[in-house]
Amino acid sequence: MVDQEEIERLLQTMSEVWGSEEQANIGLANQVAELNAIVFDGELPCVNVHVAPRSMLSGLFGADRNAAANYNPAYEDHAAYIFVGQSAIMSKDQARIILAHELVHHWEHTVSTDSDPSTYPNEIEMMIKHWFPDFKSEKKWRATHSNRFLAKAYLMSAEHGFELSRLLSGYKPAGALHLLT
Ligand SMILES: [Zn+2]
Image (cartoon, rainbow, N blue to C red):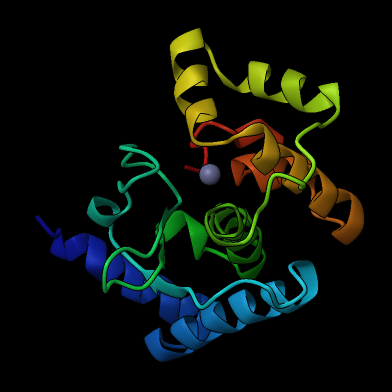
């Protein structure tokens, strides 16, 4: 069920941070295009991005209604979609890093091959352990973030200056409670 208050909050944030609902959608699409060009050498196939209420953020990669965003691969005649929620559009900088994370999912679904690296520094292991209070939630997150995903994120942080913990979790270290799915 769609919560009308939530929709109004989303519209208000789009207007305050981005200028208008239309500007928000254009801005997000531009960020995706720019990240594709700069980080992925333009290799990614088309993916739509859309601001969405929490109820739409629980797709294939997670049932967490607190998720900041969610990636939905293309299937049958549906295009690939990234849904972004309230916490992802609070600032343009926040949107960019969250889109970068979701685009790694898109890359893994559409472009990634066996020859892409799947090793990464132990620093990432430590980070993940620190985020999760218990093994069960850690296991759940890891199920959708493969070694190749983590290796790609690591390379992106090294080559393009993304803050690694934010690229993986979506949040600054102190607030890494609502992890990206
Ligand atoms: Zn993810």
